[in-house]
Image 1: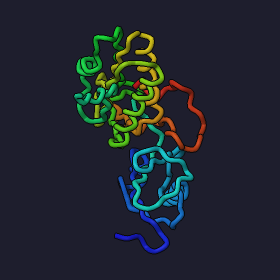
Image 2: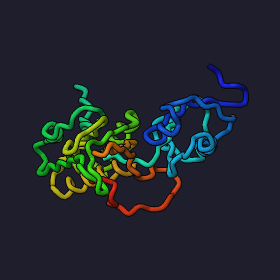
Image 3: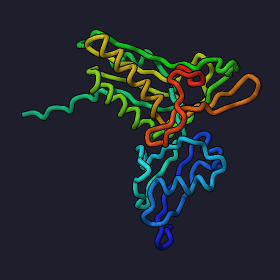
Image 4: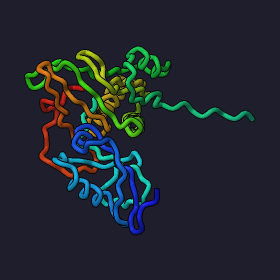
Length: 85
Length: 169
């Protein structure tokens, strides 16, 4: 399924508390061409009720900064504060 | 001339899975005759937190990334501290108190490198492994632990290291 003109599509994954708040463990999101990880997070924060603070992002399974550009087709994971160990 | 086999990977295991942690197996896998020390760290599920009785901990992980990150952490520890080999495993799923949730075995020529590398791995696991735990309580409640903001997350109010709620593991 191609993204509409002027947009790119990414697969977004949610975990733990964020998964519960988002109501799903993944969804496909279309963002305007030229969007960054930060733009995507900002948009999702407007859609997810009580999005927890301190959320990091991973692109294709590696931590990514907010200014990382999205080219379309990536897997973007929202990583709430971690508690492994 | 015969071709030489690739040198064995010093990260002999970096696994995130529902499989039980087998300490003897971790130790066995890092052992080598050139080493004078093996340190084994086990993180285990505690039966209480913040004065509440914990009946189980449910671990969730972003498995493919967590495996990759655990291997990267082990590689860093080897490079930083000069240890010989590391085997590490982290559980997912629901664990009862007393169960090992994480196991780290490090072999080194000398004990100092083994202890330091082991410490590096567990501290970085807590800082950046994409794993989350939810406590379930005797009173029927449940709660995701607060956790540490992962790399790249915006700063928020600092939580002192070792604050209650972390669990040792």
